[in-house]
Length: 273
Image 1 (tube, rainbow, N blue to C red):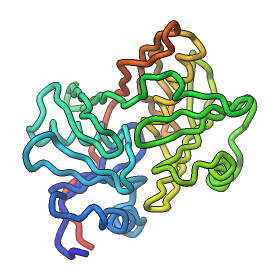
Image 2 (cartoon, one colour):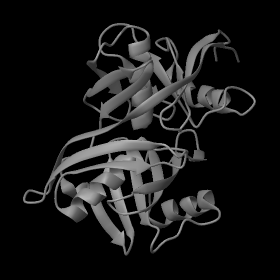
Image 3 (cartoon, rainbow, N blue to C red):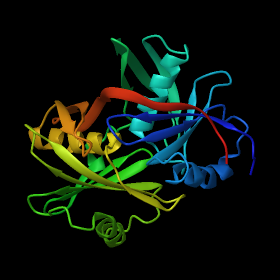
Image 4 (tube, rainbow, N blue to C red):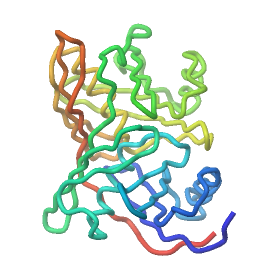
């Protein structure tokens, strides 16, 4: 493992503290999980997740620490691209866990950055399925979510261990990443409490925000409403992420899915291991 310095950003996309390691073209993907574990350590930079950014030609690339997909990290990369002069208003990025490039947008308001990223939802509505009363499975590219209605399944005192039991009970242990998303509030005031596990790093976080979990809930709400949905979903951080998805009940297909919201830079510079 290299002992060289690492250029980094630490960002907060509605919470969900994210470290982006820049200039990662020469870092072997096999080293990502071990490096990420050290960067995330409370005695180092501390965060909920780590992504590795490559900018040497072509479409900017984000590889997450376990090869999973992360919507919030994609929004973070969009912000960094704008800050470093690689993106004006619209563009595209490549993200692990997803085959196709994703469209991104950025806007500025008195120095504050808001970013939006196209979400890789599967078009077939069968990607949302009922497993049991109050429990649904949402399958996005690169990550899978269990959605638990708190009216029937209240968030437990120990959600991390509860999430491990739920993954085992539903046979999800071989997925790249799995979230257990406790939700409440319905269409009017939706909120989530996400627990996300990444298999390659064997890390579990009671996250302060979750972009893909927000989209998974939005898809479920669209199925329940029988049409397009646009909502602001409250995160455990107290901030919100806006999500929208088109859904055609007659064909059972999703399209044009996005999440958006503010991204704050917490720190940037050089870090050493």
